[in-house]
Image (cartoon, rainbow, N blue to C red):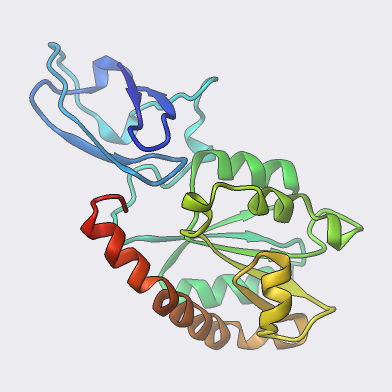
Length: 215
């Protein structure tokens, strides 16, 4: 069965043998997070949502998107960092904040992960897999995302050049929050503050879009 997201027109394929006729299933579009519901009408005998296969352009690998059927209120985070000590510090903080965490080692792996999942939070070191922080490939990818997708992602940039919570630099870099490496041990407190401010900033917009049934 081929499914098309009504919001962004992305196409997905689901094995008909893994659907139950008359039973509605729900999932989020991996591109724009639009909620999609389908009720199969064809005759099938097997229903195993855990093994459902999605394909977009090429064969889908479930390891690329471990959050296909995560509960709606579940929060996901992507850590783009190569320093093991920083990764542990960040992971420990996010774990206590109840995030489902994915760690990546290079740009190629990162872009592959983001192809299949829109993360709620991305922690990105500006030196991640590059010698030129101003040409960070992951940051460039995020900057080019459609705003309807980008506004749902909170991006935190780890840096050794700028001050923590430097709003002007955050705006210039198209990220939500700046954290200097010197303050990494305080990341939980800083993140909570930044996330709260961001939620307050977008709340009016989100409420209006929900009224229009577009969010």
